[in-house]
Structures are given as structure tokens and as C-alpha cells.
Amino acid sequence: MSSAPALILASTSRYRAELLARLRVPFTAVAPEVPETPRSGEPPMDRAQRLAREKAEAVAARHPDALVIGSDQVAAAADGAVLDKPGDARRAEAQLARLGGTTARFHTGCAVILKRSALSLSHLDTTTVVFRPLSAQEIARYVALEQPFDCAGGFKAESLGIALFERLESEDPTALIGLPLIWLAAALRSAGLALP
Image (cartoon, rainbow, N blue to C red):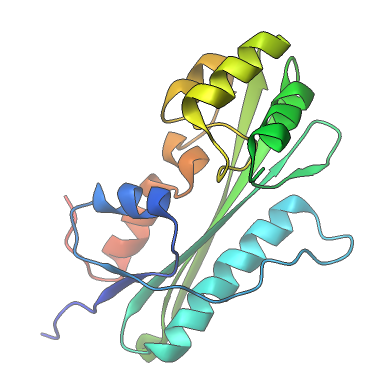
């Protein structure tokens, strides 16, 4: 019986690494070095799936004997506008002001590739987030406390950001943080990893 392949997370995201660590399987994180440039007219869900696959493929090409996980998330406001990582307080506050009292969708793509056995699995999770109306003071206070500059939409659902919501609708709450663990656990089991 062959041994289980090494597991690689094609990401530099600490949030994805923290999520994957929940499964208690050893892994390494490798930068995929894939440009995240959107394509003209590309819907957010297609962009998330494409980038997840491209990240996994890029790392798998360099590590053909490893089981590689790629993931990407694209958030879209109610009007369809893509919400990228804000990068600073001003843009985080502007994103949250736009989202207050509206509904946004967070599309999280995930791909698992093992080149040596031609394994290629992919998944898309869409989480709907309904934001409560937010005052400028609430937004400023939240951004100052949490500084969510590296998170699409300008909030951290796993932390204080949950207080900004009226509700969320998801098949997998971990997908909103960046990695759909329910699907991923099943995919890893199908690839031969021992998970409970």
C-alpha cells in the first residue's frame, strides 16, 4: 500500500492555513504565484472557481507527487460589484457603508489536485450574508477595533464582524472565512487521507 501523498495548501493566507489546521493533517503552505487579475465580463463565481483551480495547478506543476489544495474567494455586493480586500481603513469603511442594510454573496472556490494520479476535484460554495443597517459610527468603531484590511468585504466573520450581520445562509460556514472544510474533508478522504 502506497503512503499518503504530502499535502500542500497553495496559499499564503493565514486564514486558510488556520482553517486547514483544524483537520489535523500535516501540510505545508506554498505561494501559488498566480495573478488574481479579473477577466473582462467574468462573473464573480467563475473568477473564484478559475483562480482556485489555477492556484492548485500552479503548485501541483512544481510538486506533482503532492496533493494540492487551491482556494479563492470573490465577494459581490447586491449590485454585482466585486468587493476586493480593502487594504486600508478608508476603503474598509466605504465597503461596509455600501454593504449596510443589503445582501452580499461570497463565492469560495476550492480545487484539489494530485497530478500523479490525475485526481482533479473542484467545488464552489456561495454564502449569502445579510448585513444589518450600519451607522457611520458603528462602521468606524468596528474597523478601528478589527482592522479587517486583508478580508474581502472588509470584515472578519470568524471574529467581531459577525455582529454586523442580520443572518447568513451557507451550506458550510467555514467557506465564508476562506476554505470550505466540509467539502474539503470529503475530497481529502477520497484522495486517501485518513480523516475522522
